[in-house]
Structure formats: structure tokens, C-alpha cells
Image (cartoon, rainbow, N blue to C red):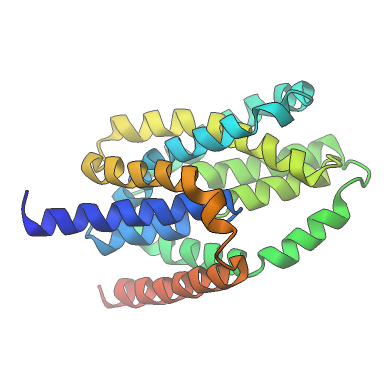
Length: 257
């Protein structure tokens, strides 16, 4: 293995660890993992699908940790599982059929949206906490919200977990903690079929996916310990600012191409 390959693997493993730690603290893992893939030279479309496949393991560990909380919510899972799976699959198919040059032009907006969403996360948390226990919205509006979040999750995904929790609370889920647990299970189920679509599409860079995924699993295991020692607010703002800077760089790159 050349020195460059060793360095590439090292960057991706470290990025995976950081992403896994952030995920356990409620952060947006893709805003670490996706830029790392771009940094080692993976093109935007391939980086997006590789990131989605690589973080399946992290999602599985989050869902496993949530198993006790969701046992009390079987009706919620039965209600939303088919919708989340179908909508995320639709988003994944949309991504695969999108021409690579078009995705290159769209992705700066998606990265910028993810960074801004991370900056606004405390505000969203306060809003959804106040929404907890409120009367459930109409079924049509709730379904539209879930579908919108899951199509976005299949297409790009950064920040979809934050949005999913907000929608679940607005549909009448009274507990933020339980909404987070339900979100973990729903998004794991939603990510499985898109991962299969991405795998057979030929866009996944498997060496990068393995390195990033291995790091994410380690990060998920050590995350609770690390998260207690690192100020979450500082980490959140730093990642969000880097995401905004990356979006600006991608805008400039697309404009000059």
C-alpha cells in the first residue's frame, strides 16, 4: 500500500470516528464524513452514495441502542415504517438517475443547507421541545412531512435525523427521548434499500466505504465517553462553519468549471 493510500485510509478512519462520536451526541454525521470523502478525491456523487453505505453500521448501532425505548411504540413504527422506506427508496432512485454534473451543481446548496441546519439545531430543539405533548397534526400533513424528510434522506440525508425528530414531535409524540429512539429505527430501515440501490449502481467507492464505516463504528462505541468531555456547542459550531466554507468552495468550483 502506497503512502498516499495509507494517508487516505487514515483520514477516512479518523473522519469516521469523529462522525460516529458526533452521531451519539445528536449531531449530523454526514457533515463530517461527506467532506472527508471529497477531501481525498472522491467525486461528489460517488462521495454521497459512499457516505450513505459507510454509515449504515453507525445507524445500526444507534437503532440497537434504541430498542428498549421503541418497544413501547410498535404502533408508531407500523404506521410510519412503510412510508419512510418507500420515500427514502424514491430519493435514492432519484439520486442515481440524476446526471452527475447536475448533482455537482445541486450539492453546494445541500451542504449549505446542512450547515445552516446544524447552526439552527438549538433553535429547532427548543421548538420541538415546546411541540412535545401538543395535539397531533392532521394525518395528511404528518405524512407529507415524513415523506419530504425521507425523500431528502435518500437523496442526500445530512440533517434528516434532526428533521425526522421534529416531524415526529409535531405529529403528537410527547417524549423527545422516545422520538429520537423511533427516529433511529425508522432511518435505519429507510437507509437499507437505498444502500442496496447505491451498491448495485456502481458509484460506491468500497475501499473508502470500509475505512469510513470502520471508523464510524468505533466512534459510535466511544462516542458517549468522548461527548461528555467535548463541549457539544463548540463542536457543532465548528462543523457548521466548516460546512458553510465547503459549500462556498463547491459553489466557486462549479462556477469556474
